[in-house]
Length: 392
Image (cartoon, rainbow, N blue to C red; front, side):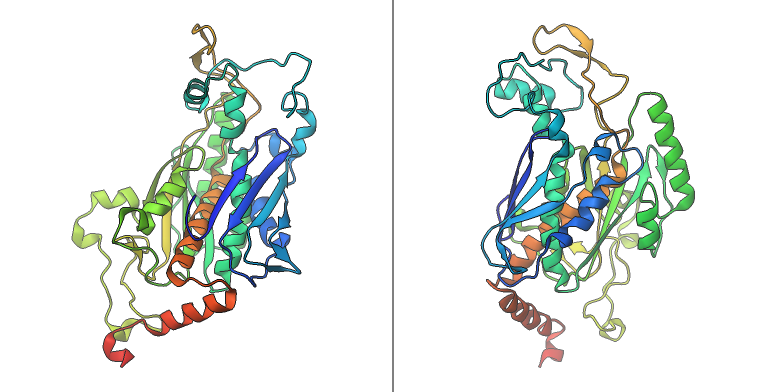
């Protein structure tokens, strides 16, 4: 990922661990391992998760780029240990092993197995599935902990929740009790829908099947003007959509009303701009937020709302018919310990990717090699907002 705030991850699902390298954090930002730990713990929770989450106790160790609690302006390195590595030392060894290791050749429909194995010329699908696993998202959530820490300095706040699982939809909530939400097994703000979602997950598990759903990410405190209309790759909604669809099992992204806007007339969809006497403390307010805080590829100053679709994961306890990579003959797809539903945790990962994009857009807009310089740039820009007559 290129940009002002950029990162790379490395590591396999059952390897020794996950590495992340972050570049772009300004010098002087307070950052600790505790800042990153909360979201890693949130990612591990959720009804429908499998046995892997009972093994791992994810925590990111900062191994470079921070001294005495403050960032140095140099790359920040993170390490997340895989505790399950102890059970895979021979099968995932770095060095050659003498013992014959069983190959995975039964392809899973809906996974990276077929295109990955054929593209890279592998005769063992494990070489693909280990990196294509959603385990990699633990590294992304760790990276986002640093991005959120930066944006928290400026009052930007993040949240996410489940809005649908297996066809069960939650009723919209104007205000969400965050404490109650995090305590809910499926991270749903609608108690009745939550119970029905849990029942749907139980039914799918009994059938050896899996479920997908939809999540919503909300971000407050973002000022008008992040992103740009002038080139396709600078549009904020385009950047967020790419980041969302880069997450394992995510198949779509929308903003505000999202696809529901297609059922309305324009007069019922577009967010009316309010006159100055109705703004309150922040300039340029709107009467609604159907566009999810982004217009023309730029933030409007309203709450950013992102909705995302998560498909059912492809590893089924009752496998689908498939084909063997080596023989081309019909077989049942490969099965390995897996989740039934990842939607509650997927919301946390979506939240992470939105935070990463916004941190990049923030640094693009305001610049600054140190936190003090960044603060001055933000303050100067915010003072300049508002109609020309008010600025003198």
